[in-house]
Length: 303
Image (cartoon, rainbow, N blue to C red; front, side, top):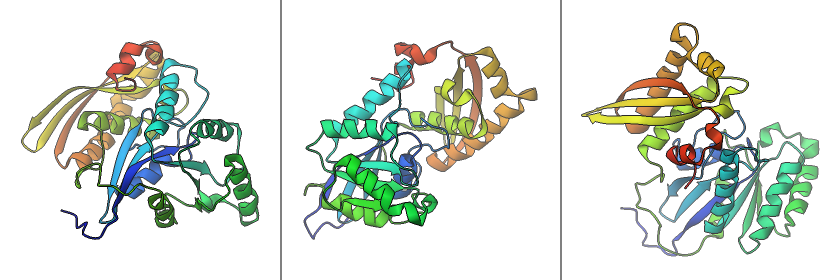
């Protein structure tokens, strides 16, 4: 058990909010110490709220990684935005994660509008990707984001989540704003996700990394079967696409593209579960699945 003989102990929920592709999931994975939210360079990689838990002798933070705020055009996108909005209401602290190498854009302004509706919750500014920020733009960009959030204090930090730069200092600011209370989760928990959901996400992650053009937004993964045989997990999964042409791309010539995805995903699943895995993948066409409330529910993308 963790020694908590020196109060006060602090714990709480912290929502990570921002537009797509600013590094929210990378930041979460770095702090938790293992992958709980998949990462790619494709926008809108995160499709539902994901809780990643960091526990130390002095605090426990349940981070809520949220889908990036964007203009919704499908039922899936609307569900993603709703999950981000609802996560704010559960939070003790909100961290606005921004791409600090750029001036605030329209989507950043949309995020700030959401934050103003939850004005009673403390907000911390995380200007990520500072390794890409030119020295002459530091003050200009910082001033612009602080003005956007109407910040009058120094609750901000410039970070590079991929390298963990200044993340410890960001954590100090966050912890100072958490309530003094007992931990919310057992010491050994690090996520609220089921093994089945995370395995499906790890498969999708490999598709996002390997594919281009329209595939990333049109693909989803569903675990059909999961059988445990000692130290072996037998997993069968379906990859959903919206068009026959997309199915052909994912399978590839003589099935080589699908085989590559399966090999990489199997390694990630084994790393997560600590067991060997036998993974079977099938690609099937489900037209307009992003508009189907039933399929979104089956995929655990909506309630």
